[in-house]
Image (cartoon, rainbow, N blue to C red; front, side, top):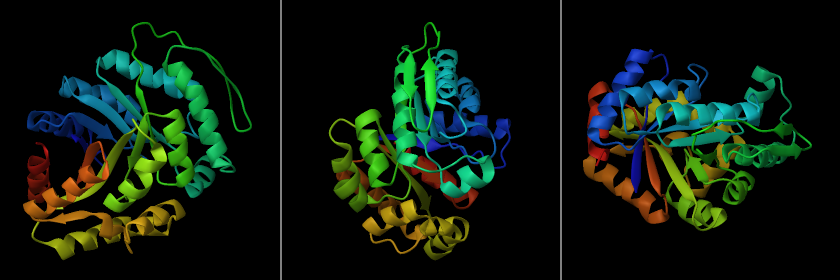
Length: 289
């Protein structure tokens, strides 16, 4: 199972992000991921990580589709790939109704239709072909001239049955956040079909303070359990709370939990370290190999 790591961008300046990137690359992490969480623009920031860690692969987890037209998304992703020379893993996703409608003012009606039409436009653009989609939720008619750029991989931030099926049809795979081994093995892998990537993003902390760290996850991410799409994936693993999905414990416990994800069919681990500075360092060092 390949291993990548989330670079913490929340409230962090570029010096801090590039320092994290250099350290992660030295430890041996193959892919550096950036989230789109209301701060820095993930795609725009990737070249800075690539410059700090030459040879590392670069990914987004994930960029919302609604505010970025597929022609714009494709142009930006191809530009990042050509500028860095690194493989780019373009994670895109629907986000959530309350964000799309309240913050951006777009309609969230028929999200799966939107995702289908978005991917139908995005894929040919990334291959250097013209898009010709005149759909119910978007129009994308045109092409791009990006000589020398290679196609980025397309991954869907996916937890619902519909978006997972679409990813199996129109993308290279999925990025999951709350899915444990049962959800991956019994739902994600068979729904995607053969030959698709399953990037398992997990909050992980190597610690002896298990209860305290789970309490932190609940305080900061507990509301995720009330989001319908996340609730459905948590239920598949029998997780009552969002914090139940975090991997927390000593080195042996963390190794075993990570191995269960691989056994279930995850092709890549996306490490999301949390905890104290020392605990995060232990987590990064343990999972780098």
